[in-house]
Image 1 (tube, rainbow, N blue to C red):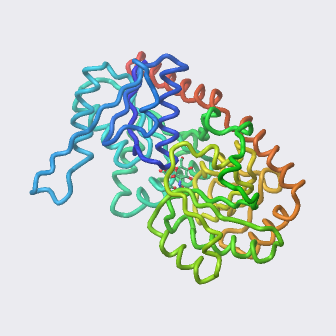
Image 2 (cartoon, rainbow, N blue to C red):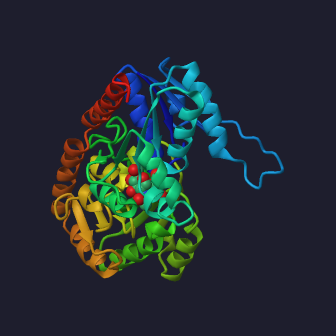
Length: 380
Ligand code: GMT
């Protein structure tokens, strides 16, 4: 099978899932995988395989365009790749603009290539549902050969927003590469020489992630607990300076460490004790899964698909979205009870590997590819 993969090649969850799925399709399933985009996937440099390719999309920065038309450039160049490499399937991650570009490329190429789209969250709930984009998103979803969503929450949201019939969208959960996230990773003592209790937050620090609540929750915990605590922030984003100001105003700036964007975060995650995720919306919450896979319990808002990932009172704690006092009160129990924390950590690692198992999920996608290709053979 030859698969073209379209996604945002950056450090977001959808980019990670798209890359790991493509890599597994090449390495485990023996397919040819062609990543197409503006930048190569961030881990591609570590791969040396003749089954994995990257094709850069070139933009024409002509001054007539207010913005270079990425979707058109992608569709045009992808139509060439379809013919040149005999592509069977285009797998678009994040509906806009990828699903639209995939359909356009198929039309231009004149080939019966199959279009599969995986919805990741804000592509539907924020961008796709917006009046400026609703019709084109709906059109793309109707014309794709298969659609998957990363949680039941997102599947149902999409059905409701676009009036889609039940059964049209299939839930396929996200997964992790266990090589990078597993409970066997050693804690890095040099990161935490004073053996503090480490709270961790991982995100792109956008408003939807409620990064100021991360600071507030940490402040509540560190003032109410007798333990010496630190907050590590992995990732960068537009609210970082506001977080720093708030941490300063609350007098905890020395306890808060901004670690920026890192590539191999597994050892950092494994060195933490608790992940804090107060997002107001989250279709899945890949960083919650990353933490759980390393045996780190999660304190998360009961938002979107998070209850499908975090098992309340077993692998972490869910609090009503926006209720910081509830988050502090519940998380405090974990901070003050090392046995409970350890027990939850073990359950978290087990849940991560059982429910979000890489091989099982890659197989689900492979079966989906085979199903849509069977339709192609029947001339559909
Ligand atoms: O949440 C983000 O800011 C990034 C976005 C992305 O495109 O990577 O994340 C979405 O996709 C992830 C992978 O499927 C999910 O784990 C995130 O929950 C989802 N984000 C939202 O729904 C807000």
